Length: 184
Ligand code: S3P
Image (cartoon, rainbow, N blue to C red; front, side, top):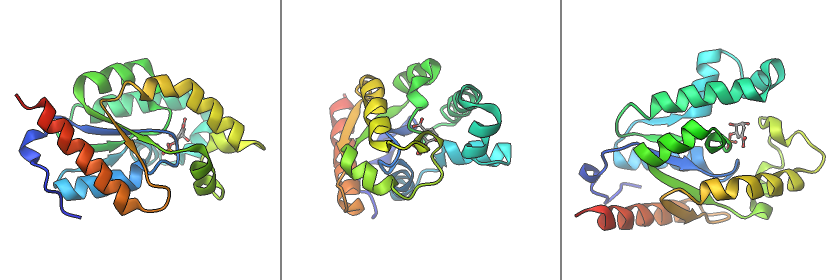
C-alpha cells in the first residue's frame, strides 16, 4: 500500500509501541515500505546481535538483562535518522527509552483490546511473559501498568481486530493528520 504521506515532513524515527500482539512488527514493516524508510524490529536486532532468541535471553540471563540490552538497542536505533522502529511491548518501561522516544521520535501507540490480543497470542511460543496459566490476567496487568506510558505517545491508533489493511489505513490517516497539525 503506497503512502500518499509527504515523506519530506518526516525528520525523525517513527516508533510503534503497544502490548505484544498489537501488530507493531507487521504494521511497522508495511509502514516503512510505504514510506520508503528503513525498518527495524528492536527484538529482531537484539536476537541477531545476541545470536539467541528473546526466550533464551530471558531464560539464561533474566528480564533485567533483557531490559538493559533493549534500552541500549532502542537508544541506538533512535540515533539513525528517519526510519520505522517496532519496539517490544515493554520497551517504554525503561525510563531512558520513554524519555528518548518522547523527545526524538514520532511516537505511536497501537491500541488493541485484550480479547483480540488473547486470540492472536493463543499459539505464541515466543513470548516469555505469557508462559503462564492465565495469559488474560497477565495482559490485563501489563495494560494496567503500561497504559499510562503508552498514553504519552503522540498518536493513538485503534487497530482493527481482523483487517490489517484497515489498521494500516487508520495508521496512515493518523500520521497524516499529525504531520499536518505539526507543520507550521
Ligand atoms: C515483551 C514483549 C515482546 C518482547 C519480550 C517482552 C513485553 O515483544 O520484547 O517478550 O514485555 O511485553 P512484542 O511486543 O513484539 O511481542
